[in-house]
Image 1 (cartoon, rainbow, N blue to C red):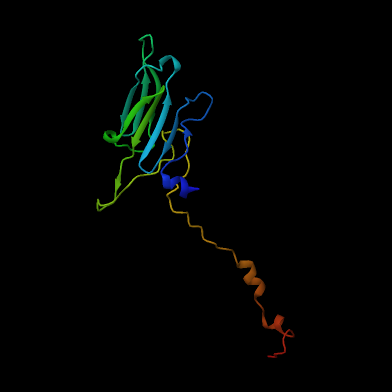
Image 2: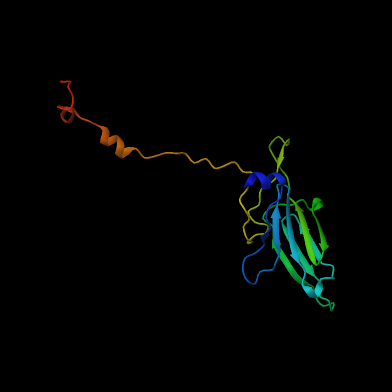
Length: 167
């Protein structure tokens, strides 16, 4: 599974939250980015939302058509750190598309960087698929031999008469 999907860098869209009362937002991720899509309410499909991206927090608000207070569509902590400067959002077809660039983690020498695989897009949100780039877990093939070893032990007395050899 991981080789064909992961090689293209795309993953399946996962609902952001579980439950009947959850918003219809979805999320997906690659090694470098997390993309969250939030549909705007039909009454505010033409309104320009307010999106706030912070290193560990995301907020999406939509102004009401009558000019009253903005409705909060999403206001959650993120499951990882993002680079605010490299992240962006757009509105297309009544959907806010938020592209969050994962913050790079450098090794001790500062030479190589990697980005973490997020278990979910937001804290408390629905979990996504396991990291397809992670090495497989090593599970040793160890079997208990205690019973078998004890069965094979022969004493001089029990061995007598079972062989042509005599003591």
